[in-house]
Image (cartoon, rainbow, N blue to C red; front, side, top):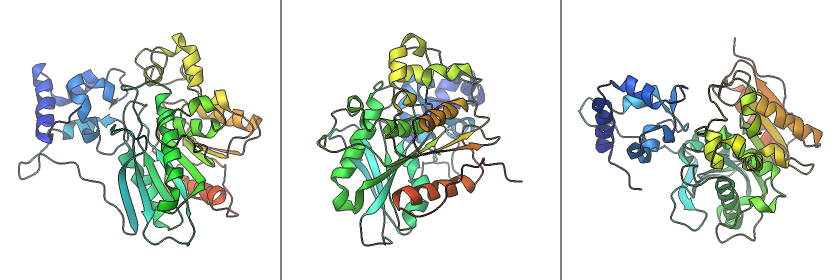
Length: 375
């Protein structure tokens, strides 16, 4: 689908508001069907959905009220504001939009980040970021902010992976894409100086779900898919950092949430192609807890105790299942936190220690103590 110019996008948003005699704030409320204060791509009118990524300026997979209102703002010179290209930090080489599935689909691309001056002569471990957005929004561009500190250290390579959204293809297309990306990275590891045997994954929300699935499905051939030229390569990974990802879709409505997860338009229902309680087999097939087994790699799970979108219990259930299976799992409650917004810098320190331990072999401790708000 072709994209509108920024000017055309602004005109369409303003026309949509004026056509119903509403100001932008009222328009936002009308589109925000589940009342969670954020717009997903599927909540926008059909003609505006292709421009979702341009309006979602912080790449969190949702359009906030402020981002919506900013669409009509103009610079002091009267020109529409343009979304700025993501900068690349000094010391980092970016190789963007690499096709991993041998298709022309822009969603099936990854960005690769490498240190200009690696800390060692040998191949570097790789950390892969997978974005959130309810499987119906978001993009790989925001992965740079998470990966940059690791890559800038000289000790890691980083990759941010895009995948097909639920409006384009339902489950298991998303995990097939992620696994195809891992196979591509393994096949091209030597030319990029990365170690095919030291790959960790990290993601938040829907991305947390997908990295958890990668962790538990290394021995599940039916989830590998057949995308790309490198189906002879493995798609398993060596460790997982899961930020507040769904883990058991059928039980999400057993706990308070601002989303009716069993509803026909919930992110989970859109993922599996219909209301999850009417598609229970598909919902179980898309739930990481279904595949937990003894041989799964180490997990680090962080989840806000006051998460109003993905219930905290989702990570409790996954951590308990992993522990029961004998998997090395560290579960960190983030007290008082919601769907993200964790107090810095403790979460990043735990993540760095986890990757240093499991990808670099350093003798460091990964604390499972709760993270509390800064005083």
